[in-house]
Image 1: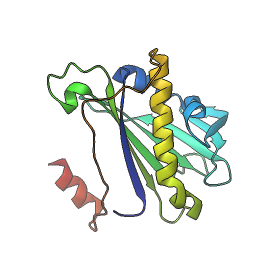
Image 2: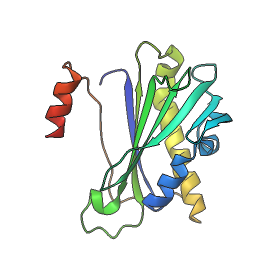
Image 3: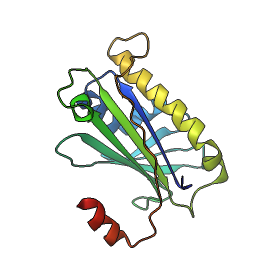
Image 4: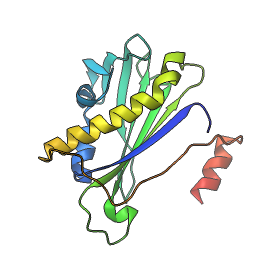
Length: 179
């Protein structure tokens, strides 16, 4: 596996719409992340917040990613407003996307962390798996508590993913993967 990304997934017993609305609000990161705390709102989709892995504040930005079959967002972070070096795409797959015709109630959450190799710190890379695994469980718990659950729900399926580095011009990769 290449070293600048990390992917994690979980089944969450909430609707795709509820998960999307919750994840679009950056102050909700305070509830389930280990070190991200929103301190000051810059604009509708941007906050300045703490970041334990960088030992300094970051600009946090969120944007919706358009897809007709599932909800998706991207969190972005950087040291300066609109100059982001971390990207966190999040896909929220409805159960019938994972298994057509499924009546399972919930959403399959898939989160990828992509970090600019020139900006990553050793602390980030040493802890990314442990931190993101813990945060994923905390997010699942936060959303399922809102649904009235008192223990973790189990999904029927498990999303398994990995990330790879492709040594090719981005235009070539986009054309190939878009086909």
